[in-house]
Image (cartoon, rainbow, N blue to C red; front, side, top):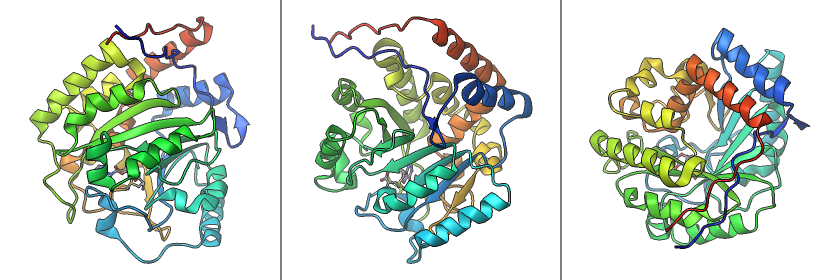
Length: 336
Ligand SMILES: C[S@@+](CC[C@H](N)C(=O)[O-])C[C@H]1O[C@@H](n2cnc3c(N)ncnc32)[C@H](O)[C@@H]1O
């Protein structure tokens, strides 16, 4: 029996809020109470394609279906953000994507200050800037060989280096898009990264077919169902919160329930806003007009659906209050 390093139970997340430390009651609890009373706010979630450029070309990537030459210059983006500010844009949560967003660090450096919460989704090949207020999602689509088959030779090693050299205290998760080429990797990937204390979670979602992107990557729903069962089991028995997708979100992704979160019920479609590299609104979502909504495997609609459920909001608020007053627990070392 070998023991992996002990993971502390997650502390209440207190990333900074526009440069200030988040206060538990005012900045964390109050918005949840507001969600509970008034429902999910309009344009509370935004995705921004920072750039149309990427240094790698992933086999599954929706972005290349909409590839365009033009992108706004930094000063044009700033002008755009200022105009939105004048129009009362809420500036709550931004996901910076692309293309590869960290090709334009200087733009995010300024742009992120407009928003309360920021996520940067990156391919992990450019190092991570020291932004402790940002949640970094590094896309890792499998263990080394399948990952590099999808994302390019040598990319996995660059990610390992990026994470090893990242400044302490960054909020780093890995994001794995499961598809026909990497579904065997789920457990080895968890095992490989679980002992790495720089990585908080691994998030899993499923490949979404998009017109013009290879379609043999889609995992049929009955297979997805088995993966969801296994992920829930692994969460309960071995990895806990290291699998960063909640049981409720996983459950919503099941074939019998997914309609609650997608199509006309998609919270992102109703309340979100995606900007393309020219600052124009994209049709549907960050995956654009050609994404097959019926077969959507993106975690976002399921996660947002959970966030609108009053039962969940109450559970979360109660859990957070309990955590606030409870001494830190330790999760026991896991046996191999
Ligand atoms: C378009 S990429 C842009 C950000 C960055 N360059 C990267 O590689 O993470 C954003 C995320 O979308 C995911 N993605 C791309 N195409 C997808 C598809 N067809 N279905 C599901 N996820 C997809 C990628 O795996 C990645 O995690």
